[in-house]
Length: 249
Image 1 (tube, rainbow, N blue to C red):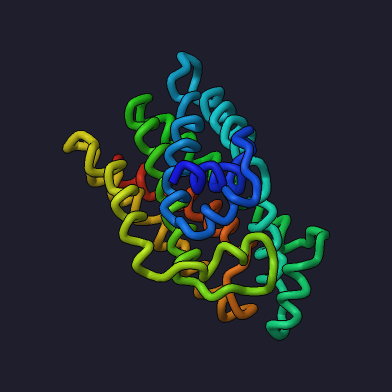
Image 2: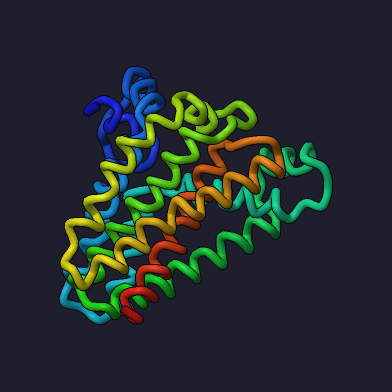
């Protein structure tokens, strides 16, 4: 398990954890490692919410910390899917846009809107207060990684690549440990916070299902870009859903 987690952190973050072929292969066979990595990223990304500084500064530090820890690989996946979504043509045309190393208008728009949405979500989270913010950031990260684990276990592999090599290696039964690992982020919360954290936790997998279905229809399967886009969009949607639920309930 520790080897799989090291592989997950090497794949999903820029943390200096080593890795190597053994860790990579263990990660491919262990979807729950996605969730464990989500806890690590979530804790680190939540640290700026402990700072006694104005909310805009907290949000700026949150964004900086998040991308220092995770890098921009997943954002690149979102950009590639944005380019593919902008293509009016066949699945082959979309795959060509997906594999094009350049960034087109669709990709630029997708990343731009995502960054604005994440910033606004960050402002809402920070406005809920430090304790709530830490819980929401952690839950959103675990939620996004749970969605990725679901795609890896249930998706159909797309074109060959580093990310698609994760998809289809295990079956649905591997999701039981994933669910067990993700639940504490909501169940261990105080009673008043439980509804918001539960909604946050469920949103990432829901977004991943939608992204995975679209990718399968659009170009035949789940790729590394699909996983990356599901992570970015899942995090954003989870944060917004959590803030809305926290505010209303």
